[in-house]
Length: 196
Image 1 (tube, helix red, strand yellow):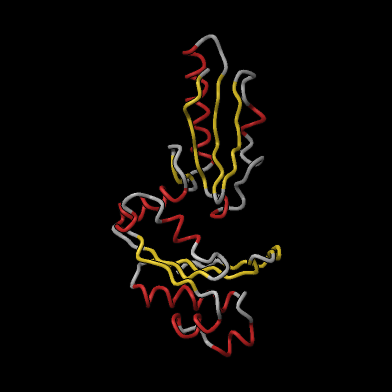
Image 2 (cartoon, rainbow, N blue to C red):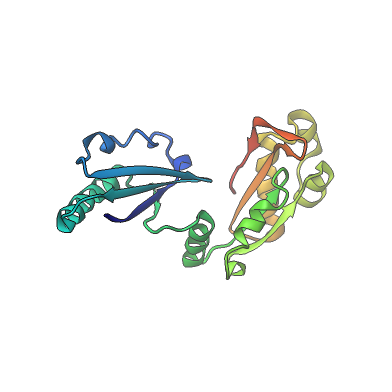
């Protein structure tokens, strides 16, 4: 079995390229399989060849790998089997950039995920957990009138949270979340995640 080609692409970056739409799976040799392995925020693609002829398997997978690279050009975020938080950290570190967060419904989960990577202090500056509207206003500068008019779970408010994180934390990029996802249960579709 030959099984060492792994691709990761971010489905959110290009919804026109998603599982079942590469067209490649319909033209695979019978001894090659293409697996879609979804995880949080990414989809891993794995080519596996099952053959007694190692050279034949390697050649088939190499050719299919090139086809996948062409189909997914610009959307592959890693060719190694890494978690998304490691990929984000590698990219930020290599670019010399920093990130921060303004979290409401996630309650610090983004900060926890990003800081689970050794050396994350090189690029992760912090997070403002603004579960209460008062904190959104006082710490992040969210407009009271926009909170009243649009509600905490709105694009207008979450964009202000992201801008507030940029200002308060002094980071290059920020992510902000708001939604209905507390201990009593969430409401599907009520999550807003702008990036600054």
